[in-house]
Amino acid sequence: MPAKDELARRRYERLIDRLESMMLAALRPEYEGYYGQLILGADDLAEMGELKDVRRAAREAGRRLGWKTTTRLVGGRLFALDEREVPERIERLAGDAAAAAMDRFWEESRRRD
Image (cartoon, rainbow, N blue to C red; front, side, top):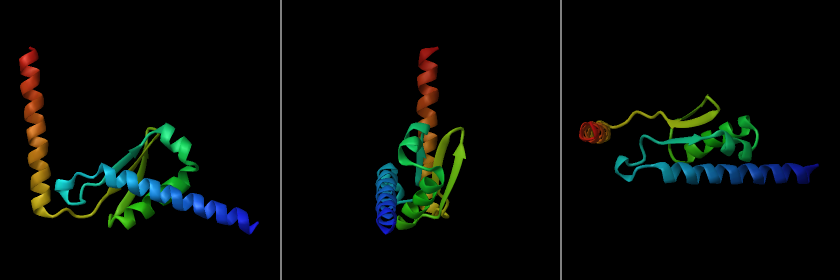
């Protein structure tokens, strides 16, 4: 029986490592590690194993990155989110980027009309 426990532990550690890598890849460098999020679809979840284990592994992966991690299941997708308070300068930078994206969208929609 201990061999099975060891195998499960190693599988779980690999899951944490994989999720941490995915979370890190999803970060925007200019936000200095803030506004972290990872969205896993139903196919990803099915491949990764039991939902409770994936959620727990995502929270551990987030802790490794310094996140205050929360997970939410919405419509078959699992969201892992960093809910830390964001410094004001990073918040302004993200707000400016969102406003610029909206401006581009409106500009493009006017050109199509």
